[in-house]
Length: 168
Image 1: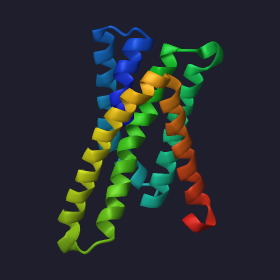
Image 2 (image 1 turned 30 degrees about the vertical axis):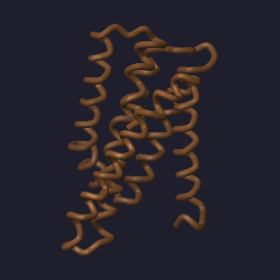
Image 3 (image 1 turned 90 degrees about the horizontal axis):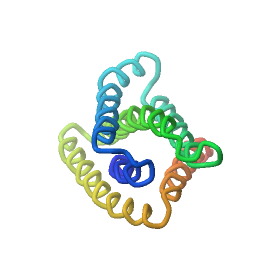
Image 4 (image 1 turned 60 degrees about the vertical axis):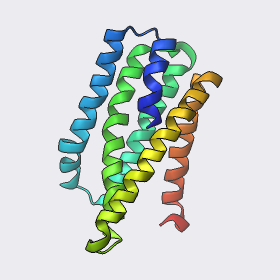
């Protein structure tokens, strides 16, 4: 959630996006969320099972955040094209990861409890969105780089936990 709430003020403040360009960026994110949740997940299910889709999604998400880190550093500093490109894997695989995690929630409980589990999942997601808006504002006041680095770090740690023998 932080990416979607953080990027508009970041792009407006640091890349000086006007309202038209910002609306186009948000629309592009919405488009890739739609593609990921409809065509993307169906296509991946033809080739992979849910755990492999989730792992692949986490790698793609890490790739998207890596593009952002490159866009913030060195000669590429604040390269607008890289920010546009990074939104594609982040938006697509974020929604695919959410579908996979929701599938896990649904599969671990009996049918009679699935509504409760999914309701709980939506409550947690809403709380996370609320907290992420506050944290996003806090982190952008400290450094725009910090939030992207933390996202990248958490994704890398998640992948390490998955591949560590204890995470399997």
